[in-house]
Image 1 (cartoon, rainbow, N blue to C red):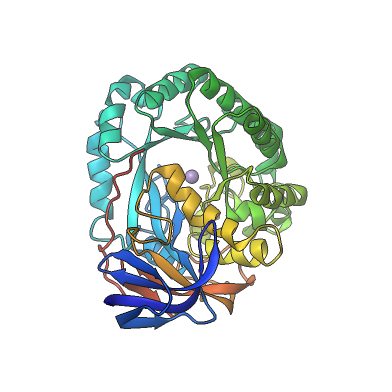
Image 2 (cartoon, rainbow, N blue to C red):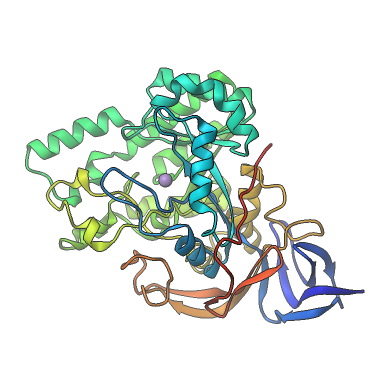
Length: 452
Ligand code: MN
């Protein structure tokens, strides 16, 4: 039997096994995994790893803030993702005050369609003005938004009573709540105190968002979710204090999962010692923490306390980051990172011995698919979508704005060397990136209706 395409001679790595095998593809799906498979087209993967395409369930493409819009759009952002070995992203829907959830979903899909180059899903945001729309949660779920974003910070933050009601509504449909957990009342008070005392430069940003109060918010969230009887996923964990609360909840058998991001693993608050305007680039929330926190996050990934790694990709240009150097609270928050996630975690996680190849695949792909209801994604076996990456474990890349394809004029990983980089990315059986070139058409990505 001859297949449409066979990836020959690679080391297949899944979340549970590592073995030499060919991977055969017919159409958009994996048809067979075995030895001696032949195809009308073949890709040589000798001395390479063959892994399920990365899944990044936390990105903000063309994200509109009141005064800024994130620099990557659905085309440029998903192209960079593809070149870095990511074949699925999940972005967000934010309904306007008078807009139905499914109308907002349709509008966001219209922004992505014609642009997006890999498959994508969307989380539905429940902000205070959705409290009168909780009866629409089943409709949003049925339309494919199986996860719901809740904020405990920013203008979209929910108070505890609102958090309770939102979690109840999500539980009713067996959806997954995903939550930004920080203590907004404390943050606003500390920001006001700092600004009033003239402490207005970016180095004061981490001091106004204490790790202990990130942990307090995570704990409060876990307790309210436990009372409601729902699982919950905690976004962008930055510090030891949250890891401890998460581990304790898991020891009690609670269905609580967490994620961290490459910037919390690779960087720390020392960047705020850099001169202005550079220091302003690193404003994000939760903030970068200490070196000890970085180490604890790496260990927590190895232990499985933190389940997955996402990027929270939300780039702003150097000029945008530099517009409010003397009021750090007005600097648009967010960092780029959609492209180098797999390579950073391979180089500094697998190579440095924090976790295995299989755990790397689990935290970047398989575990993400399971957590977010992506049934066709994240594994190498017959019947799964042929979203695959040929990864060269020896290829060295120095990360710079020249080597990366994110549409932003800086990277937090400038000058960082990674050893291990994708050479071929396939999405539903189609080669979309090869040897650093993006070779597919905008708009080929499909919206993924997710369900549990
Ligand atoms: Mn985010």
